[in-house]
Length: 381
Ligand SMILES: Cc1cc2nc3c(=O)[nH]c(=O)nc-3n(C[C@H](O)[C@H](O)[C@H](O)COP(=O)(O)OP(=O)(O)OC[C@H]3O[C@@H](n4cnc5c(N)ncnc54)[C@H](O)[C@@H]3O)c2cc1C
Image 1 (cartoon, rainbow, N blue to C red):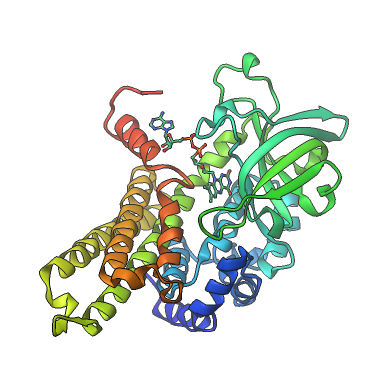
Image 2: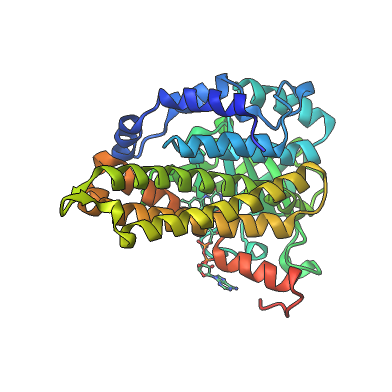
Protein backbone atom coordinates (compact mmCIF):
# COMPACT_ATOMS: atom_id res chain seq x y z
CA UNK A 1 0.00 0.00 0.00
CA UNK A 2 2.72 2.48 0.97
CA UNK A 3 5.40 3.77 -1.30
CA UNK A 4 8.59 2.81 0.59
CA UNK A 5 10.42 5.89 -0.72
CA UNK A 6 7.74 8.21 0.65
CA UNK A 7 7.59 6.35 3.97
CA UNK A 8 11.36 6.62 4.33
CA UNK A 9 11.39 10.33 3.45
CA UNK A 10 8.54 11.12 5.87
CA UNK A 11 10.22 9.12 8.66
CA UNK A 12 13.44 11.05 8.03
CA UNK A 13 11.62 14.38 8.22
CA UNK A 14 9.98 13.28 11.48
CA UNK A 15 13.38 12.52 13.03
CA UNK A 16 13.92 16.28 13.14
CA UNK A 17 10.93 16.54 15.53
CA UNK A 18 11.69 14.23 18.47
CA UNK A 19 9.70 13.70 21.66
CA UNK A 20 11.27 16.75 23.35
CA UNK A 21 9.83 19.01 20.62
CA UNK A 22 6.29 17.66 21.17
CA UNK A 23 6.59 17.69 24.95
CA UNK A 24 7.54 21.37 24.97
CA UNK A 25 4.55 22.21 22.76
CA UNK A 26 2.23 20.04 24.82
CA UNK A 27 3.12 21.91 27.99
CA UNK A 28 2.20 25.24 26.38
CA UNK A 29 -0.60 23.83 24.20
CA UNK A 30 1.26 25.46 21.33
CA UNK A 31 0.96 24.76 17.61
CA UNK A 32 3.76 22.79 15.88
CA UNK A 33 4.40 25.52 13.30
CA UNK A 34 7.89 24.29 12.34
CA UNK A 35 6.66 20.73 11.84
CA UNK A 36 3.69 21.83 9.72
CA UNK A 37 5.96 24.11 7.67
CA UNK A 38 8.38 21.25 7.05
CA UNK A 39 5.56 18.96 5.89
CA UNK A 40 4.17 21.72 3.69
CA UNK A 41 7.52 22.53 2.11
CA UNK A 42 8.11 18.85 1.38
CA UNK A 43 4.72 18.78 -0.36
CA UNK A 44 3.12 16.15 1.86
CA UNK A 45 0.08 18.20 2.82
CA UNK A 46 -0.66 18.63 -0.90
CA UNK A 47 -0.52 14.87 -1.47
CA UNK A 48 -4.10 14.64 -2.71
CA UNK A 49 -4.20 17.86 -4.73
CA UNK A 50 -3.97 17.01 -8.45
CA UNK A 51 -0.77 17.94 -10.27
CA UNK A 52 -2.60 20.42 -12.51
CA UNK A 53 -3.22 22.52 -9.37
CA UNK A 54 0.33 22.19 -8.12
CA UNK A 55 -0.15 19.21 -5.80
CA UNK A 56 1.49 15.79 -5.76
CA UNK A 57 -1.53 14.04 -7.30
CA UNK A 58 -1.11 10.98 -5.09
CA UNK A 59 -3.91 8.59 -4.20
CA UNK A 60 -5.55 8.08 -0.81
CA UNK A 61 -3.45 5.01 -0.03
CA UNK A 62 -0.29 7.11 -0.36
CA UNK A 63 -1.76 9.92 1.76
CA UNK A 64 -2.71 7.33 4.41
CA UNK A 65 0.89 6.09 4.33
CA UNK A 66 2.16 9.61 5.03
CA UNK A 67 -0.10 10.10 8.06
CA UNK A 68 0.57 6.61 9.39
CA UNK A 69 4.32 7.22 9.23
CA UNK A 70 3.99 10.58 11.01
CA UNK A 71 2.16 8.92 13.91
CA UNK A 72 4.41 5.84 13.98
CA UNK A 73 7.36 8.24 14.33
CA UNK A 74 5.87 9.74 17.51
CA UNK A 75 4.78 12.99 15.83
CA UNK A 76 1.19 14.27 15.62
CA UNK A 77 -0.52 14.79 12.27
CA UNK A 78 -3.61 16.10 14.08
CA UNK A 79 -2.08 19.54 13.71
CA UNK A 80 -2.52 19.52 9.95
CA UNK A 81 -4.28 16.36 8.68
CA UNK A 82 -7.49 18.26 7.84
CA UNK A 83 -5.79 20.08 4.99
CA UNK A 84 -5.27 16.75 3.26
CA UNK A 85 -8.93 15.79 3.11
CA UNK A 86 -10.72 19.15 3.21
CA UNK A 87 -9.34 20.23 -0.13
CA UNK A 88 -11.36 17.34 -1.63
CA UNK A 89 -14.55 19.32 -0.97
CA UNK A 90 -13.28 22.20 -3.13
CA UNK A 91 -11.96 19.78 -5.75
CA UNK A 92 -15.25 17.89 -6.07
CA UNK A 93 -17.78 20.68 -5.56
CA UNK A 94 -16.00 23.97 -6.22
CA UNK A 95 -16.41 25.95 -9.43
CA UNK A 96 -13.49 26.15 -11.87
CA UNK A 97 -12.75 29.64 -10.61
CA UNK A 98 -12.68 28.45 -6.97
CA UNK A 99 -10.42 25.52 -7.81
CA UNK A 100 -8.00 27.75 -9.72
CA UNK A 101 -8.03 30.35 -6.97
CA UNK A 102 -7.60 28.13 -3.90
CA UNK A 103 -5.98 24.80 -4.78
CA UNK A 104 -2.63 26.08 -6.11
CA UNK A 105 -2.34 28.44 -3.13
CA UNK A 106 -3.04 25.59 -0.71
CA UNK A 107 -0.63 23.28 -2.54
CA UNK A 108 2.18 25.84 -2.35
CA UNK A 109 1.57 26.44 1.36
CA UNK A 110 0.76 30.13 0.83
CA UNK A 111 -2.79 29.47 2.03
CA UNK A 112 -3.48 27.31 5.08
CA UNK A 113 -6.75 25.42 4.96
CA UNK A 114 -6.98 23.72 8.31
CA UNK A 115 -10.31 24.74 9.85
CA UNK A 116 -13.55 22.87 9.43
CA UNK A 117 -16.63 24.38 11.10
CA UNK A 118 -19.42 21.83 11.45
CA UNK A 119 -19.97 20.95 15.13
CA UNK A 120 -22.01 23.32 17.30
CA UNK A 121 -22.48 23.31 21.08
CA UNK A 122 -26.19 22.51 21.03
CA UNK A 123 -26.49 20.25 17.98
CA UNK A 124 -23.47 17.96 18.63
CA UNK A 125 -23.54 14.92 16.39
CA UNK A 126 -26.98 15.88 15.07
CA UNK A 127 -25.62 18.08 12.28
CA UNK A 128 -29.06 18.77 10.79
CA UNK A 129 -29.96 20.62 14.00
CA UNK A 130 -27.19 23.19 13.64
CA UNK A 131 -28.23 26.78 14.27
CA UNK A 132 -25.64 28.94 12.54
CA UNK A 133 -27.39 30.83 9.76
CA UNK A 134 -26.19 32.44 6.53
CA UNK A 135 -28.67 34.95 5.10
CA UNK A 136 -28.22 36.24 1.57
CA UNK A 137 -28.08 40.02 1.32
CA UNK A 138 -27.10 41.32 -2.12
CA UNK A 139 -23.75 39.85 -3.14
CA UNK A 140 -22.93 38.67 0.41
CA UNK A 141 -24.15 36.19 3.00
CA UNK A 142 -24.49 37.41 6.58
CA UNK A 143 -23.45 34.70 9.03
CA UNK A 144 -24.58 34.50 12.66
CA UNK A 145 -24.08 31.73 15.18
CA UNK A 146 -21.40 29.66 16.84
CA UNK A 147 -19.22 26.62 16.21
CA UNK A 148 -17.33 24.55 18.75
CA UNK A 149 -14.29 22.29 18.43
CA UNK A 150 -13.16 24.08 15.31
CA UNK A 151 -9.65 22.70 15.42
CA UNK A 152 -6.69 24.80 14.23
CA UNK A 153 -8.92 27.87 13.72
CA UNK A 154 -6.13 30.12 14.97
CA UNK A 155 -3.67 28.57 12.54
CA UNK A 156 -5.71 28.54 9.38
CA UNK A 157 -6.30 31.17 6.71
CA UNK A 158 -9.54 29.70 5.45
CA UNK A 159 -12.32 27.65 6.97
CA UNK A 160 -14.94 25.43 5.41
CA UNK A 161 -18.16 26.41 7.13
CA UNK A 162 -21.51 24.62 7.19
CA UNK A 163 -24.45 26.96 7.90
CA UNK A 164 -28.20 26.96 7.46
CA UNK A 165 -29.44 29.00 4.48
CA UNK A 166 -33.07 27.80 4.56
CA UNK A 167 -34.91 27.44 7.90
CA UNK A 168 -35.35 23.82 9.01
CA UNK A 169 -39.15 24.31 9.08
CA UNK A 170 -39.13 25.02 5.32
CA UNK A 171 -37.22 21.94 4.12
CA UNK A 172 -38.30 18.32 3.70
CA UNK A 173 -35.28 16.87 5.53
CA UNK A 174 -33.40 18.74 8.23
CA UNK A 175 -30.11 18.09 6.43
CA UNK A 176 -31.48 20.04 3.44
CA UNK A 177 -31.08 23.81 3.41
CA UNK A 178 -27.50 23.72 4.71
CA UNK A 179 -24.75 25.33 2.65
CA UNK A 180 -20.98 25.15 2.60
CA UNK A 181 -18.85 28.29 2.42
CA UNK A 182 -15.18 29.07 2.09
CA UNK A 183 -14.54 31.69 4.76
CA UNK A 184 -11.43 33.83 4.58
CA UNK A 185 -10.62 34.00 8.28
CA UNK A 186 -7.89 36.60 7.81
CA UNK A 187 -10.30 39.31 6.67
CA UNK A 188 -13.20 38.08 8.83
CA UNK A 189 -11.27 38.20 12.11
CA UNK A 190 -12.42 41.23 14.06
CA UNK A 191 -15.10 41.80 11.42
CA UNK A 192 -17.70 39.49 12.90
CA UNK A 193 -15.46 36.48 13.56
CA UNK A 194 -14.12 35.77 17.05
CA UNK A 195 -11.97 32.75 17.92
CA UNK A 196 -11.46 31.43 21.46
CA UNK A 197 -9.15 28.48 22.14
CA UNK A 198 -10.36 25.64 24.38
CA UNK A 199 -7.82 23.97 26.64
CA UNK A 200 -8.20 20.22 26.16
CA UNK A 201 -6.77 16.96 27.48
CA UNK A 202 -4.25 16.94 24.65
CA UNK A 203 -2.65 19.57 22.46
CA UNK A 204 -5.12 19.90 19.58
CA UNK A 205 -5.61 23.65 19.13
CA UNK A 206 -9.39 23.37 19.15
CA UNK A 207 -11.50 26.51 19.42
CA UNK A 208 -14.89 28.05 19.85
CA UNK A 209 -15.75 30.29 16.93
CA UNK A 210 -18.38 33.01 17.06
CA UNK A 211 -20.04 34.72 14.09
CA UNK A 212 -21.68 38.08 14.60
CA UNK A 213 -22.95 39.47 11.29
CA UNK A 214 -19.87 38.11 9.53
CA UNK A 215 -20.00 38.93 5.81
CA UNK A 216 -19.03 36.23 3.32
CA UNK A 217 -18.98 37.08 -0.40
CA UNK A 218 -21.63 35.09 -2.30
CA UNK A 219 -18.90 33.85 -4.64
CA UNK A 220 -17.51 31.87 -1.67
CA UNK A 221 -20.54 29.55 -1.63
CA UNK A 222 -19.45 26.06 -2.65
CA UNK A 223 -21.65 24.35 -5.20
CA UNK A 224 -25.40 24.81 -4.92
CA UNK A 225 -27.07 26.60 -2.00
CA UNK A 226 -28.86 24.16 0.29
CA UNK A 227 -26.80 21.10 -0.72
CA UNK A 228 -23.88 21.69 1.64
CA UNK A 229 -24.51 18.72 3.92
CA UNK A 230 -24.11 16.36 0.95
CA UNK A 231 -20.75 17.97 0.09
CA UNK A 232 -19.47 17.50 3.64
CA UNK A 233 -20.67 13.88 3.68
CA UNK A 234 -18.83 13.24 0.41
CA UNK A 235 -15.54 14.01 2.13
CA UNK A 236 -16.13 11.80 5.11
CA UNK A 237 -14.90 8.49 3.73
CA UNK A 238 -11.50 10.02 2.95
CA UNK A 239 -11.41 11.64 6.38
CA UNK A 240 -12.26 8.38 8.16
CA UNK A 241 -9.68 6.39 6.26
CA UNK A 242 -6.95 8.95 6.88
CA UNK A 243 -7.73 9.16 10.60
CA UNK A 244 -7.78 5.35 10.72
CA UNK A 245 -4.31 5.35 9.15
CA UNK A 246 -3.15 7.71 11.90
CA UNK A 247 -4.49 5.29 14.50
CA UNK A 248 -2.56 2.46 12.85
CA UNK A 249 0.57 4.61 13.12
CA UNK A 250 -0.13 5.30 16.79
CA UNK A 251 -0.66 1.59 17.47
CA UNK A 252 2.68 0.81 15.81
CA UNK A 253 4.44 3.47 17.90
CA UNK A 254 2.97 2.14 21.16
CA UNK A 255 3.76 -1.47 20.28
CA UNK A 256 7.33 -0.70 19.38
CA UNK A 257 7.73 1.18 22.69
CA UNK A 258 6.14 -1.69 24.65
CA UNK A 259 8.36 -4.28 23.04
CA UNK A 260 11.55 -2.28 23.59
CA UNK A 261 10.76 -1.45 27.20
CA UNK A 262 9.44 -4.93 27.99
CA UNK A 263 12.71 -6.49 26.85
CA UNK A 264 14.98 -3.99 28.53
CA UNK A 265 13.31 -3.57 31.94
CA UNK A 266 14.41 -6.24 34.40
CA UNK A 267 12.40 -7.01 37.55
CA UNK A 268 12.75 -10.22 39.62
CA UNK A 269 15.96 -10.86 37.70
CA UNK A 270 14.39 -11.17 34.24
CA UNK A 271 12.87 -8.99 31.54
CA UNK A 272 9.31 -8.05 32.44
CA UNK A 273 8.16 -9.10 28.92
CA UNK A 274 9.17 -12.67 29.74
CA UNK A 275 5.94 -12.76 31.76
CA UNK A 276 2.96 -13.73 29.66
CA UNK A 277 0.82 -11.31 31.65
CA UNK A 278 2.95 -8.55 30.12
CA UNK A 279 3.27 -10.10 26.64
CA UNK A 280 -0.34 -10.92 25.96
CA UNK A 281 -1.93 -7.45 25.97
CA UNK A 282 0.86 -6.26 23.64
CA UNK A 283 0.36 -9.25 21.32
CA UNK A 284 -3.42 -8.85 21.36
CA UNK A 285 -3.24 -5.16 20.48
CA UNK A 286 -0.81 -6.02 17.69
CA UNK A 287 -3.29 -8.52 16.22
CA UNK A 288 -6.07 -5.91 16.45
CA UNK A 289 -3.86 -3.37 14.68
CA UNK A 290 -2.97 -5.77 11.87
CA UNK A 291 -6.64 -6.62 11.27
CA UNK A 292 -7.59 -2.93 11.27
CA UNK A 293 -4.72 -2.20 8.90
CA UNK A 294 -6.19 -4.64 6.38
CA UNK A 295 -9.50 -2.78 6.56
CA UNK A 296 -7.76 0.58 6.05
CA UNK A 297 -6.05 -0.86 2.96
CA UNK A 298 -9.28 -2.26 1.58
CA UNK A 299 -11.07 1.04 2.15
CA UNK A 300 -8.29 3.07 0.49
CA UNK A 301 -8.15 0.69 -2.47
CA UNK A 302 -11.90 0.99 -3.06
CA UNK A 303 -11.75 4.78 -2.66
CA UNK A 304 -8.88 5.00 -5.14
CA UNK A 305 -10.85 2.88 -7.64
CA UNK A 306 -13.78 5.28 -7.27
CA UNK A 307 -15.95 2.56 -5.72
CA UNK A 308 -18.32 2.93 -2.74
CA UNK A 309 -16.37 2.49 0.50
CA UNK A 310 -18.63 3.82 3.27
CA UNK A 311 -18.77 0.44 4.99
CA UNK A 312 -15.01 -0.09 4.87
CA UNK A 313 -14.13 3.50 5.80
CA UNK A 314 -16.37 3.38 8.85
CA UNK A 315 -15.14 -0.04 9.96
CA UNK A 316 -11.52 1.01 9.40
CA UNK A 317 -12.00 4.05 11.63
CA UNK A 318 -13.77 2.01 14.34
CA UNK A 319 -11.27 -0.86 14.39
CA UNK A 320 -8.15 1.28 14.06
CA UNK A 321 -9.22 3.63 16.87
CA UNK A 322 -9.89 0.62 19.10
CA UNK A 323 -6.56 -0.96 18.15
CA UNK A 324 -4.59 2.21 18.92
CA UNK A 325 -6.34 2.49 22.26
CA UNK A 326 -5.59 -1.15 23.11
CA UNK A 327 -1.94 -0.63 22.16
CA UNK A 328 -1.84 2.58 24.23
CA UNK A 329 -3.32 0.86 27.26
CA UNK A 330 -0.86 -2.06 26.96
CA UNK A 331 2.00 0.43 26.60
CA UNK A 332 1.13 2.34 29.78
CA UNK A 333 0.73 -0.94 31.69
CA UNK A 334 4.03 -2.30 30.38
CA UNK A 335 5.83 0.87 31.45
CA UNK A 336 4.41 0.69 34.98
CA UNK A 337 5.07 3.98 36.79
CA UNK A 338 7.22 5.28 33.95
CA UNK A 339 4.15 5.19 31.67
CA UNK A 340 3.01 8.25 33.59
CA UNK A 341 6.27 10.17 33.32
CA UNK A 342 6.21 12.88 30.66
CA UNK A 343 9.72 12.17 29.41
CA UNK A 344 8.70 8.78 28.02
CA UNK A 345 6.07 10.36 25.71
CA UNK A 346 3.75 7.42 26.42
CA UNK A 347 1.29 9.44 28.51
CA UNK A 348 1.19 12.18 25.83
CA UNK A 349 0.48 9.76 23.00
CA UNK A 350 -2.03 7.96 25.27
CA UNK A 351 -4.00 11.22 25.63
CA UNK A 352 -3.67 12.02 21.94
CA UNK A 353 -4.92 8.70 20.62
CA UNK A 354 -7.94 8.64 22.95
CA UNK A 355 -9.54 11.39 20.87
CA UNK A 356 -10.15 9.15 17.89
CA UNK A 357 -12.96 7.25 19.53
CA UNK A 358 -14.91 10.50 19.84
CA UNK A 359 -13.78 12.70 16.96
CA UNK A 360 -14.17 13.21 14.10
CA UNK A 361 -17.00 10.73 14.62
CA UNK A 362 -17.82 8.81 17.76
CA UNK A 363 -17.77 5.03 17.91
CA UNK A 364 -21.53 4.81 18.54
CA UNK A 365 -22.34 6.74 15.41
CA UNK A 366 -20.19 4.39 13.33
CA UNK A 367 -22.00 1.41 14.84
CA UNK A 368 -25.33 3.10 14.01
CA UNK A 369 -24.15 3.56 10.42
CA UNK A 370 -23.18 -0.11 10.10
CA UNK A 371 -26.39 -1.30 11.76
CA UNK A 372 -28.64 0.79 9.54
CA UNK A 373 -26.85 1.10 6.21
CA UNK A 374 -24.95 -2.18 6.04
CA UNK A 375 -27.11 -4.58 8.04
CA UNK A 376 -30.49 -3.04 7.21
CA UNK A 377 -31.56 -2.67 10.85
CA UNK A 378 -34.15 -0.02 11.76
CA UNK A 379 -32.91 3.56 12.01
CA UNK A 380 -32.53 4.46 15.69
CA UNK A 381 -32.49 8.25 15.55
C1 LIG B 1 -10.36 17.74 20.13
C2 LIG B 1 -11.54 17.77 19.22
C3 LIG B 1 -11.39 18.26 17.93
C4 LIG B 1 -12.49 18.39 17.09
N1 LIG B 1 -12.35 18.98 15.84
C5 LIG B 1 -13.44 19.31 15.14
C6 LIG B 1 -13.35 20.14 13.97
O1 LIG B 1 -12.25 20.54 13.56
N2 LIG B 1 -14.50 20.51 13.35
C7 LIG B 1 -15.73 20.10 13.78
O2 LIG B 1 -16.73 20.47 13.15
N3 LIG B 1 -15.85 19.30 14.87
C8 LIG B 1 -14.74 18.91 15.56
N4 LIG B 1 -14.86 18.13 16.70
C9 LIG B 1 -16.19 17.75 17.14
C10 LIG B 1 -16.41 16.24 17.09
O3 LIG B 1 -16.65 15.86 15.76
C11 LIG B 1 -17.57 15.96 18.02
O4 LIG B 1 -17.11 16.16 19.35
C12 LIG B 1 -18.08 14.57 17.87
O5 LIG B 1 -18.67 14.41 16.60
C13 LIG B 1 -19.13 14.25 18.94
O6 LIG B 1 -20.05 15.31 19.05
P1 LIG B 1 -20.39 15.93 20.50
O7 LIG B 1 -19.09 16.22 21.17
O8 LIG B 1 -21.32 17.07 20.34
O9 LIG B 1 -21.08 14.77 21.25
P2 LIG B 1 -22.63 14.44 21.33
O10 LIG B 1 -23.27 14.46 19.99
O11 LIG B 1 -23.22 15.29 22.41
O12 LIG B 1 -22.55 12.95 21.83
C14 LIG B 1 -22.07 12.60 23.15
C15 LIG B 1 -22.02 11.11 23.27
O13 LIG B 1 -23.33 10.56 23.04
C16 LIG B 1 -23.27 9.61 22.00
N5 LIG B 1 -24.47 9.70 21.17
C17 LIG B 1 -25.10 10.82 20.71
N6 LIG B 1 -26.16 10.50 19.97
C18 LIG B 1 -26.22 9.14 19.93
C19 LIG B 1 -27.09 8.21 19.31
N7 LIG B 1 -28.12 8.59 18.56
N8 LIG B 1 -26.84 6.89 19.51
C20 LIG B 1 -25.80 6.48 20.27
N9 LIG B 1 -24.94 7.33 20.88
C21 LIG B 1 -25.16 8.64 20.71
C22 LIG B 1 -22.05 9.92 21.18
O14 LIG B 1 -21.54 8.78 20.54
C23 LIG B 1 -21.09 10.47 22.24
O15 LIG B 1 -20.37 9.42 22.81
C24 LIG B 1 -13.76 17.94 17.52
C25 LIG B 1 -13.89 17.41 18.81
C26 LIG B 1 -12.81 17.33 19.67
C27 LIG B 1 -13.01 16.81 21.07
